[in-house]
Length: 290
Image 1: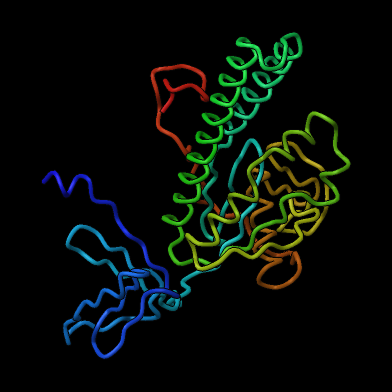
Image 2: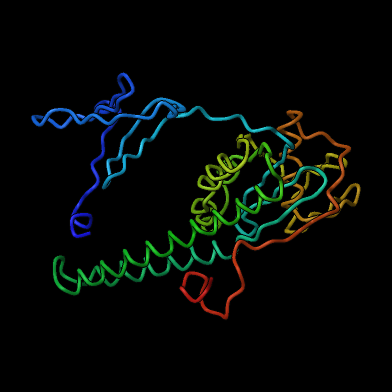
């Protein structure tokens, strides 16, 4: 047991490890080559990439081709700030709140400004300067883990609601977003849209980004364009629904047909979700919120 605790794993890459005549060859430099006889029943599923030699055990890692997943449905996904994800297949829509992620980003910005102001008055390399630096990086790491956790939970809810779906996602930062105000531009630029697209890409069949210009301003029923607030109310036909739902429906039409075609209806089944569990209280970036 004492020898097992002192033993460290030895890792061989695909350039070192080889299989010849039913034997696993592991080179040991001037000590020669370690030869391990393999059972005839062992068949590698793909190219040998790595061998990890543990205490009495050899673990082989192989490269296998990706299996194509069957496509069941196509959904449109609209990413935002207050509503982190709005996804629809034309029949139902789920709206995942993004207020926890927004509050965490705002908390990080305020704390970062406070730390930077405090560091500017300290001598670099001093004990107080180092202490503030450690506290600053601890805060940045904690908020980064919080945002990553929220993104994972939100994208998992989309994958569970629409299994094996192909996602058409609006581009995270288009030309229209670059002309908005300073405060709104900061919220949009610091939103974790790129991370969400990457997570959707491997949790679903695939995520395809398309241009979402005017998708939240165009009525899917009559095709008229008008600026609205959180609730979209068409001035021509009177269609009413959440603005994020309108954007997701139009993105779905852009992905499937290549244009925002009129004559469609807004989904009746609207489900509001949160990517976190309720807690006893505390700031969303603090450990008291789960």
